Amino acid sequence: MSTRPLSTLVPMWQAEVRIDLDAIRDNVATLRALTPAEVMAVVKADGYGHGMLPAARAAVAGGATWLGVCTLDEALELRRGGIRVPVLAWLVAPGLPLERGVAADVDLNAAGTEQLAEVVAAARRAGRSARVHLKLDTGLSRGGAPLAEWPHLLEAAGKAQADGEVEVVGVWSHFACADVPGHESIDRQLASFAEGLALAERYAITPRYRHIANSAALLTRPDTHYDLVRAGITIYGLSPLATEHASRLRPAMSARARVSLTKRVPAGQGVGYGLTYMTPRESTLALVPLGYGDGVPRHASNVGPVRLGGRNRTVAGRVSMDQIVVDCGDDPVAPGDVATLFGPGDDGAPTADDWAAAVGTINYEIVTRFGSSRVPRVYDGSAGVPAADVTPAPGDGEAQ
Ligand SMILES: *Cc1c(COP(=O)(O)O)cnc(C)c1O
Image (tube, rainbow, N blue to C red; front, side, top):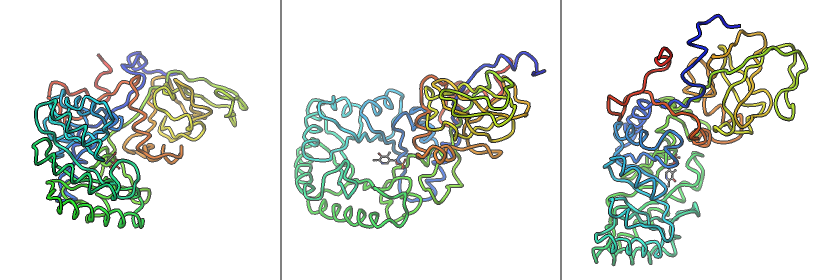
């Protein structure tokens, strides 16, 4: 039984994903200090679950001079949100209304002559030249023109540029194994990129921006930075590297929920669907209202870490769609208490890295999953936000 006043038992929120915008700004500033190159903040997939527009604004406040997204829609949403810095959208599919991107000053990717032809057609429809980045496949075998097709793309781009239909702003590529420092493919891809750039020069294509580095290459390989680095996971304060923790970065996302119910149960009580957890002794179970419908991976059943009542515990039984259960033993946990699934790791609470390790995935997937719309996303800090829009700090809202 809790003896606290009613106001804390009727909380403002039952679950929330908190985003520290100042952390995003400061992380970008930290990354900028690591390189003379410009920083493109990658805010695809709703800013890795952090909210694309707020993340973008905070990143720009921290010194990002470019933004990177996957889809044309994402790029247009940035423009609608008033973002003025250059934006590159890299996943161009056939039939898209690319002229809208051209009209909105969105940089488009061309990974082959067919894609370049689409961009040229879009430029004609828009009645102005398109800004384009030519992508070379240096070994990832995903987007990008293979080296054998590269001369054809360069020739077509050179012609389109001479005709005033496109401006080749960038030549770029993407690493396969930059998160494994020392992997032999990194040098191979870098050599292939240099070869591609040399070939481009022979076709008189000398773009202002040559870029291949992602977060991992930004942290570990200064020789890959060229003119621009594309930083995603690190702007959110997480490390792409299994080995080296990026200690100067601060994780921006926290996922928390208030215990909705506690109950005393005897030893040997099965918990959750399938009864995959048995209480080892009489104990208090706490219901935490976050489930796989909110972003908690179902693979966290019986392994996901949760901080509750001043201790780190483990999800008891299966993750349901809407809730998880935590076995609190004899600790005095009560409804309204805050359970932290992950956050910046203050006071020893779990992090997105801990969740990734427990579940067998990467921190990228953990935070991106929590971009789910059911959980209210609350913003802390003021980076990039007009003063009137700043949300109250934790606890401020309780008396309202
Ligand atoms: C997502 C993405 C990035 C960012 O990668 P991080 O590892 O998060 O820094 C960079 N470039 C491309 C092409 C991407 O798709």
